[in-house]
Length: 397
Image (cartoon, rainbow, N blue to C red; front, side, top):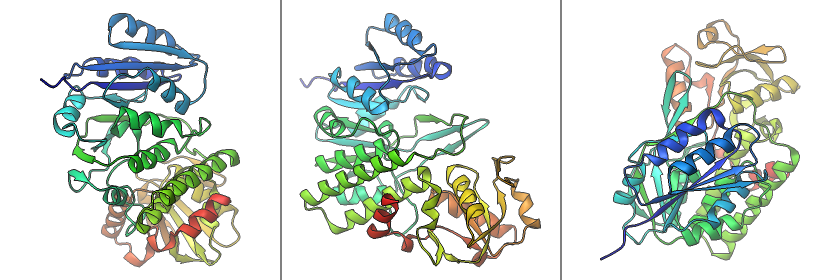
């Protein structure tokens, strides 16, 4: 008789006292019981350490580790050394999962041959509202190249059908350990992208199942998660590592472009504002917005904030407004984000939709058209702007 599949769940914890009880409780209450829970307190200075100890005393499946602060990569590596499960997945300490998430993984995703399983679908938890994340168009076993195409659809900018987050996958323990060990501990953003590519390239059998049971809590805080020059350098090293792995494995040519799209999306989200100025004749990656244009920016998140900053500092463009359906009242220089209704009083050549999700961008464009705005005045990020050469130039700064 085959022994039941065991699953290790690693939870990196750093100063998430407000959210941690709900996170751990949601894991302990899983309907699938053959799990171990590894809490890695990464040097928290709030009450998170005590919460970890409390839960470890209540549930014998919990292993609690306290370590000096080393960052999320280091915490996951430490947790992985304690894992005994056949497969490993992760849950961030400020998120939570529904009771049947692991049962769905085991019942529908793990037949014994899978090296990786993507759990497609997740829920972003905003104050007062929810938003469903990427859902794959199909489910089953797929080749590496097909999976990479779902990570980065090179026909749209930036369309993806599966999320390259370690929280949205389960990986065979040996592959998990090997891929994670290759990531630089200093990387604070982009570690999930790096791990995903490395794990895919080490896997032979990759399955996608439908699952929208992971709740990703959108915490309040900085609206502009820009990395330091050193962080960008680490992302560049990550890119080179993945690229070298693709070369060594004689990967299909299409996978190199898919990788470029993945990292370009990452740079648009967390890179420097200079990302938008890497082409001289147009506002990158909006091919339709030529130098000298006046622009209204739609989107008050990380991408829109950096675009507004770039436009205000640029001598080649004029920012005439900043709008968002949900986040308004934010200020950058003299520009304040306004409700979507304010678009009626703006003068502009183009409205630049500054979000990285292609599905969200298309939805925003449809709403603007319904308001009577001409389609040719609405600019989406263009996939024709993205190439390996341009991405590498952006990474070099």
